[in-house]
Length: 85
Figure 1: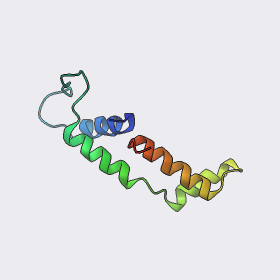
Figure 2: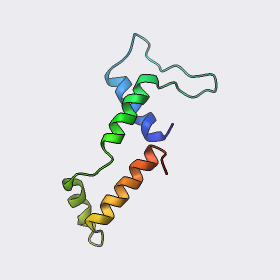
Figure 3: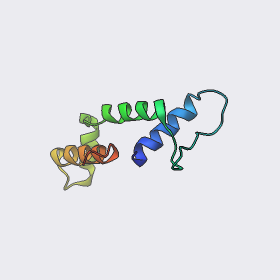
Figure 4: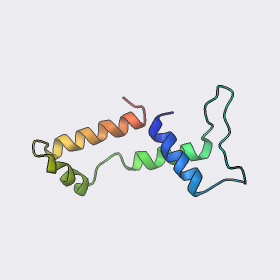
């Protein structure tokens, strides 16, 4: 699971706790079992895959970046977060 999915999962778990446990259980290999929160995180990140016009415009403040460059860069970053690369 990617760091971004873990980060979003943890934020969702903190915002919407399941049960009374304050910690997320670790699986046999020591990694966390994000379960439903991981599914929600993946869904949220997938929904962000296409940048909005406002996001592309915000990237233009760097001068040499075009809206198309910003679009492709954003999609690559989301793909990396989803580990699709």
